[in-house]
Length: 111
Length: 116
Image (cartoon, rainbow over all chains, first blue to last red; front, top):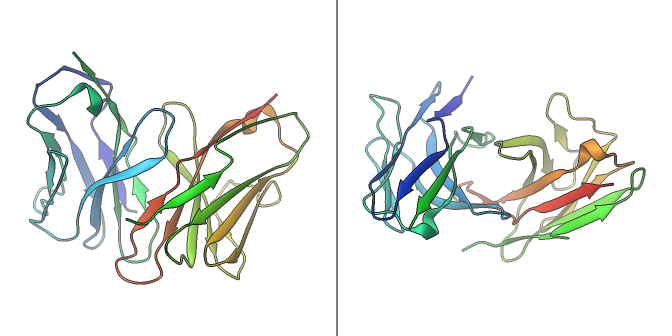
């Protein structure tokens, strides 16, 4: 079945460091890919998405590129801030199917 | 963007009582809503898919008689935790999918349930 695998957390970085959170997927077709962010005590917010191969999603300085050849959708940010501390979820879905989430990666940014 | 609300945001109840959680799509119509449960420091677990005007589809292992879902309109779905017990304490999150366009899901802010 379809699945999503994220890098193990937690991840702790200093402010202004470069961030990469790896995400790979398995799917029978060509899913849409998402990154969601969850701040403490809150629900999920869509951070960015990509619907087809080679698409790049971007928002708030975060980027991720849909790589069909490596079945990956790694999240990157060039200079993180303390306010980026949150849990990040990679997810996929195809058509009307349900969202499939990765296990989440907790990110802590220290000043 | 599309907004989904949940009410209440947190609730504390006694063991054996029932608790109802509402999920509303505020500015769009949602034929489909989803209910998730999230344990501390864990990912979201899909509990059920709720379609307007029909019975919900429950995921394997989720007790339909314990977690009652009603989706009576295109903007409202409710989850009732019946005869709650401490092990039902969790963070419950709903999402709603637009009826048209991309099929993107929009998430509510979550409801923290604590059963004493």
